Length: 358
Image (cartoon, rainbow, N blue to C red; front, side, top):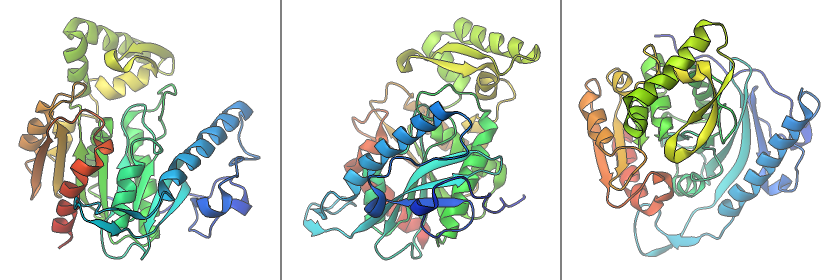
């Protein structure tokens, strides 16, 4: 298998905000530039989009910084109850440019002692997710235990119209794995939540990236067409897919469709996006992809998850025929937002990370 390549070229970011990093990687120091709101200048073709992007990033900066600099006293982030003095963690906003020219934003939590030899973690959100909600508490807890940790905005994040192909997730994840390795990571563990589980499984199955040594799957939805059939029934779910396939066949794949996601609300998807997620040739099927993954896998699912069927966890375990180790854990009473259940999942995750690091 071809090993993913190097970091893409540098994007347009004010030089005054940059820390010295490898080409294609940009970092904004929270400690020195917390008030800097104009993150993009000069090369944005759409001024409105640039302003919106700057507002989102500056808002994210305050959210992430608020967690990053909230006091050091607390309990052991791996589950202990004795009050301890927690290590300081450096927090940055970072940007990378993918191999196909898409600029992505994220937050990086660096342990006080640097990355060391412990695995670095890349946190990949699900549908309508982002790096600045849900992940910061878990990311900081991991960094306090010595893990370089990065949460990423995928190219289709938040409630923006979803227009990419599912296969584009490979370029997004590859760019950030490159970043983590450039920052001194010994190796990387990919953590996916909800749709993010399908993303990280696809990446590793498709690339067999030797820099990735483990996968963590949180609240996986399973096969996306099956998920829609469970929510809406077969006839209605197949009608949406048929409409999208017809548009693609007629050369109208980029046209937007108003798609009902049930409990998630109605959203704008391009027809080609729908087909790439749910069509017969989709690369998103997690049960097919996990069968090709040959590194350790940790599966976490809440017993009270009403969005993603908890039975998916056992189906994933059964399909993981190539891995040397697959460990499923059901979190009692937890719903779909597992990354927010830090006290429940961090002890499990911490023990698993220690085990695969030996």
